[in-house]
Image (cartoon, rainbow, N blue to C red; front, side, top):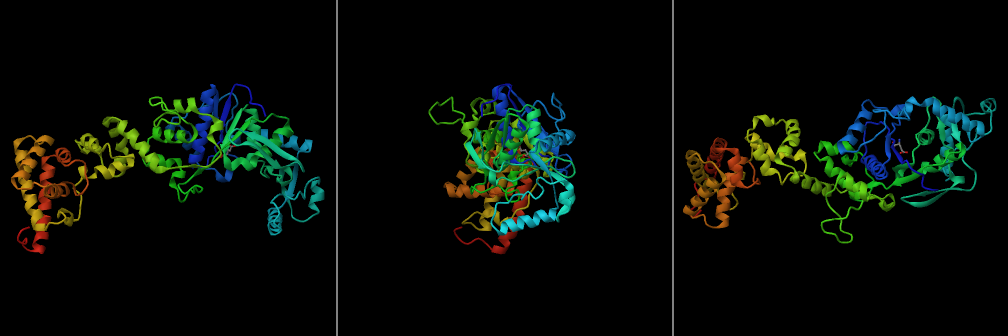
Length: 514
Ligand code: GLU
């Protein structure tokens, strides 16, 4: 097979099932990279001939997902083009016409076998350990002849007649030359009884008529390719270059299951607050080696890059046929890198919908940006913003026992807290509720109270931390107190004081020396 001449035309042929699989997105990225590299055209063709699977809004979801990632296309149902219509359901006469031509040439035939008969045939083949394929009961028969036999139905389909012997070979740029023994290949259905084509007919007719030069699809379609090549041959058409991308695997190197791996669904990445740049970068890593230009050394890849770099360094042949593990931890890391590089202002805008979905209205928190700035480095997904920031919005419930530092009693914690409240009051009265003043005054206080070891100071700060935030882990304490503001801190510390009083009452008076 020779490489087809320019102009390069690639296509993405999604079925509108309402679910955009991450594997299809990878294929879309490969398509877009091929088109960009060659200055070619990316076509989106909607393969909606399986009416049972039709889902409202599914087509929009496909456009939206690609758009979100920054993948651009030139021809599609939503924008037209020279080969319109781009929705297969609007092209039915074309498929019927080609099916008729194949029948007239003897390359396809009608089949009147009932679903029951086909099922029995499959059972018998299974029992005899034979490859599952149609036994050609209808081949060479007129309808009248076939009707005389059992297992007949008037609803005929059209089947492709495969060759009886020899083999079908083709060269996949990702996998090399592949050969299929014709004798093992099934006479697949091309046209269904309702007049709709199957994928196997429609895909070939459309790829040819739309002048597609490169077909890229997932490995799961590989078994269909010999049938497609047979259709190309029978219609006297040159096939395009056909490449099958490797499967995406889970961390255990197993197949992705929609049920066990929610990230099989592209929507998940958006819902979790991954940034499109990070997802694109991650997928780009699976298909292109982008050298690090700042630290040029053989085999050293650049970590952060965008579509331009993917398109510049992408090479179909180097993708390799083996499955690609999707490592969500790595994606989290990458997403965190992109989040860190954003301005707080940008992050504030992007995190706001996630906070709103969790019930936090950012307009009610004047210190929203300052609070976000404190969490900026820790947030890996935007969906973590509500959990990271909730204590800035609300006085949260917590277990009062958390106020008692390890190795201390409630009475001792109360003493530490009283000291801290006095410090906070003094700072509040000074009118200088800032990180540096809080820091200075607390350190002076610790010194004065003899809290000179790390452990003792840690106990003091621990009580203040839990009392003011309800958490044991927060951003740096004085920054947090500064953003929370004096009145919130004093209110929360007084609630904490009540908790500790109750705990101390249960515990009894502090023992000597504590
Ligand atoms: N409609 C098929 C799909 O949903 C297209 C496969 C192909 O690209 O040929 O993936």
